[in-house]
Image (cartoon, rainbow, N blue to C red; front, side, top):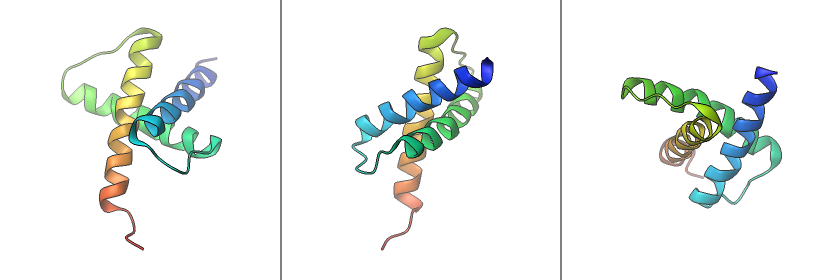
Length: 81
């Protein structure tokens, strides 16, 4: 059940980050990948800052912040074709 919860939060966070950052290619798989990696990254960053998020809203905020950071990093260091 925790795995399903993690996937759903990642999917929602990926979609939300895509909307905030105005990402053009926002498919279901794209959102899921960005959201799940963002959730891990957000948890790591929040831990470094000494912040803890609990509950559905806290997890969604953490994952969304991580996904936004990931999108920014991908834009900065991504391929320049």
